[in-house]
Image 1 (tube, helix red, strand yellow):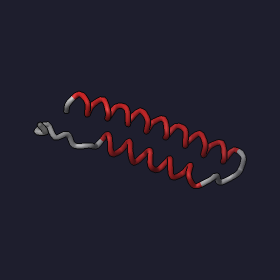
Image 2 (cartoon, helix red, strand yellow):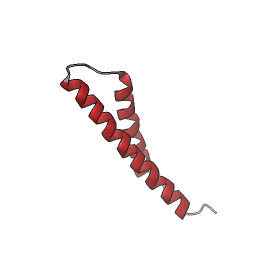
Image 3 (cartoon, one colour):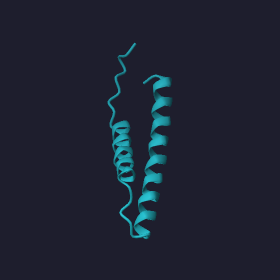
Length: 65
């Protein structure tokens, strides 16, 4: 894995965790107020989990360049 690819992977992983924490906070705050909340919170939650899973299970091809 080259250095640029590793740096981008770490940046996207950090951003995914930030969005995951933000969406959990939004969902919990809506539940505390006894609202279901907008579907964008749940969509952000699902997409951030999928992004983290994709980044962590990505196969590394060392034969590139």
